[in-house]
Length: 109
Length: 117
Image (tube, rainbow over all chains, first blue to last red; front, side, top):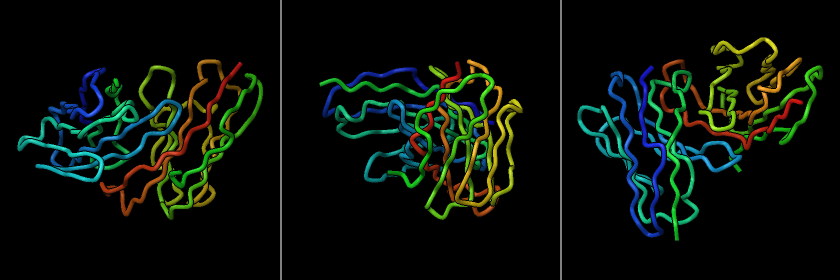
């Protein structure tokens, strides 16, 4: 199973763009990269998934370099409600994806 | 509202009790999962059911017993638990065409907060 490394915590201010980088040096050819968001006492919520290059949806963008050994989740113009824990997962399917400690993002006014 | 409903939301039980957690999804998904989240620990995958068949059991103690009677319902039967089993138990579901399907976004319920006295 590909191991992921993320910063434990990050601080930002409202209106700023936030980039959270995840390292996955031993990612396999058939692995996808998936990000989830979790608020306290709730289940995680899917944000975005990608395999290579760039993926964008209405919530975030995911940048994946050519070697795929890392990925960056980009949240544009964060608000206080974006304060949460963000998880990066790598795997070919849900059976083999493991949640790590995640990155605790705190957005300040 | 994610389409995945867990009951009860809160449960307090003694170590000798037998209780069950219930999960129900109305999303037409064919894979369901139990996760455990202890305080300040990552989510741990406990059980996976694909097409009602258990395909994953991550060395979970036998005092936790899953049951999947159909693709919409998942239970976690609890008996003779220990205080360290106190945690948030999360159910999730996804679409899975086959074991190698990568497109299965996980939809989580809000969890059942379990306290073992």
